[in-house]
Image (cartoon, rainbow, N blue to C red; front, side, top):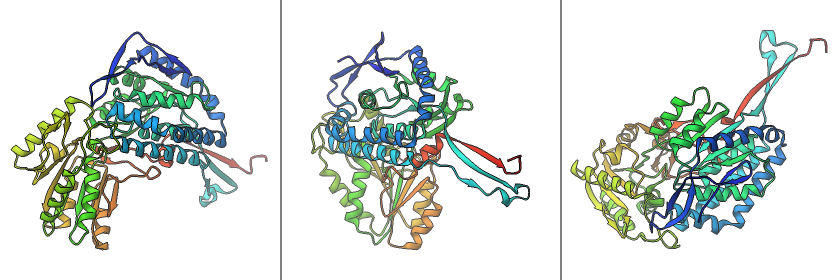
Length: 476
């Protein structure tokens, strides 16, 4: 099945195509057009041509466009989820959950479009501010280039497209090479709305061609990127004076204090570590458990993990399926072997069954092993024993990343201390760091990135604050 790109409200063919294969079956799903630099220029020019029309839309008109996108996903929920499962191997139940979040995200964006206001400035608070008043306007930046990953091919796209539309910007979307079908599905939905012609464009292809062409194009005013730190650093270096928002890597940690409900915490941890094969930016990668309950925690964690269903992503009962690429699976296996060689104990998994890397639990992992200090992005979790919560905080902070962290504790003083001392963008008390809802501010520190997502916060990243000052004495 040969696909086309979406540029200036037209479906565009190319000369070069690439085969898109199912990560689970390795069957060819579709043939995907590969954009040239000329296609990228055409998409950017289309977005430029639509800027005035977008900026002229009222808040209500922008909101209604976003609400109509949400309602289309409601009507096509199952179809959209199956596309995600087919092209990314995300188990269907998690794909359905992603579509539900996508619906919420576009609705939140519609709500925020109607709340986008500036503020009054008390000019007479200064000695020379008498007889003046001022206010700010939040105006669209212009063209937003959105570069998105494979692991949430609708909801992470919604976190860029939704705020961009809400703020009155135009968009050129470059989705991950493995998940173009979801982006084209979104284009089909947007085509049916009243969004101005050329305001939304989808270009497909490699990061080296499409991504670089977007980053280097002078007409693009902002790059919003979710992906690896290495690529994010390259984007920042090439972007010049463009605004850049980067949501990068993580190796999220969790502290489990004594006197918690072990069964409750373990159930949370199994979901946090293994949903979507661990291919989640805030996947639970490191667990630090106080020694009093360590053995009981590990025993139950292994037992619950053994009960996960491994199989086809299109089956509703499947918990774990294939990783996105064979090479990523081989990397994960190598990292497991490395950790064991460096002293870790393999408690469960560590092997491939029917093409699927089994959910893997390691204990007593060296802090410098790759499965601990780098982003594993695979169904692997490490569980280490600690003597105190303070030791756990130090271990989580001993990282190049800092996206989110969690702590389970019944002690309110411990929780407050952890919330201040953990060097991350978000601290989750009595839940896993994998927890996220789509209106909350979301972003990290260190190599986890810059800027904030979460619809309201992303909108402000995508606007320019203009100050207007009135002198009431000036001949009025």
